[in-house]
Image (cartoon, rainbow, N blue to C red; front, side):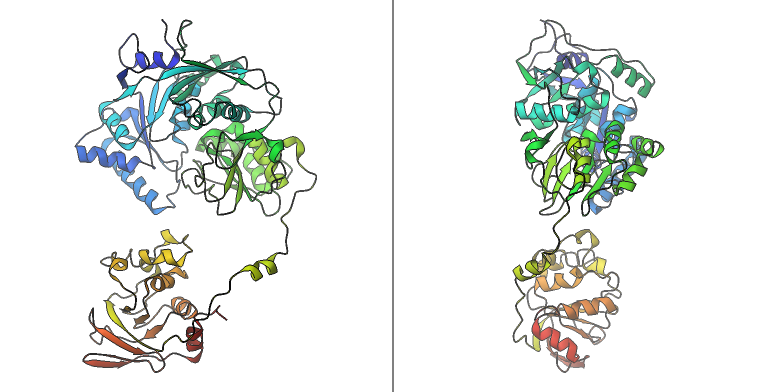
Length: 601
């Protein structure tokens, strides 16, 4: 009996003539990658185990999840990887380069019959080239880096036959959305699928990439295309070397055969929460949207952006709608610039971001907020995956048309005038809001345990670091108080309601962030006493109804644990063994304090 495509690739990489579904083999890996997401853990796993790198020339880091390191966690992970690359000679595609799987394809690292592993769950995108790609966890990847191979269980093979031809306005994204509708979220579970059908030979490399990238959403291990001459030419030009074609044997066995009817297929869209919950765009047309995202490993290639630009040229994004465009790689970005696509996007009103993944992995661009309705060209729209709003999945053409229309629509149904948001609900919103309750009878005589933080110029990043600025719920803020102040990182765990914080001069210098005040309120701290306060910080505290007293208690010898008594009216402060006169509340400060804050009626 002959071998399927996946069986042939695996057999060629474990020195066996034949492999069968269910066999567990040691498979050599031609290219081993780790991203900024997971890369630092790969390094730590290797270091803890005392392991080296089998072949640095076949090993690389790619920073595609968060280009620029705008998140402190990603920035730290990226630097760990950079240092390791310098020490070992492992390859590095830094923040300027884009999505790692696309880099591997476009740099000719991967071609027909090769193997590739990464910490990216969409590494199976390599099936577009007739190659094996697999996303794996940190320990798997660390082992592959060290040994040059991984154990792998040979999967069952199935064949997916695309029957017929779609309508001219449909794209590869519409085809794969139809596949998901037909197969379901688990339709390819455990399978290596071979995509066949009359249309397959006409599919370009980007088309194949789009379809292969979403096999994960059907539960598949990989979706493979038999490479045609166009793919072989692409790989030769990309890598400067020839690849041999690879094909399943005529007598190969398939555990299942699925047919997907794409005859006359119209543009499709996946409804929020489930990539397989797909319908024709016409079924949800007219839904008002807040934002549109064009990019990702599924639809961020040059051809995808050309298609979007064709729709956007001479048009502008609907009022109030945000359009975000993220090219897959730097090369794609530069080509967009050379061809004038960036100019089209900018004139249309889009934000064009760094090459990379966009919003899928909490990246810099592409996330949406609660209640936000987004149409995205990504591959996943699981709840919370691309933010806290609702995400529809569609082709670049449908996404661009929607951005222009302001509502979900296909290219052939863009309205003459965009659908605008309804303006004028401010009064209703204000009436619906629950007014804050006045703090009746806030005491002006306070007692509490002192925490003495004898540090000058404690800035707002030390108090409440900027990595937490997106937090708006006061109840969540307390846990991060002082976690960027050396020696005080565990303050939130030790503090108790009723405590008083005593500090040195210029407390709260730096930014205007209100959270640096509210975090103390969340912990139940009753008073802040400092030799002096940053001007903005003092205003923020007063307006929040947070008592702040100017007095040099540090210089007066106050120690941790001393019980302080403070009269806000007179500014008098006393403790066992001493007294000190602080600045009393002004009438304005007292009025705001007594009613519980500036905005409390």
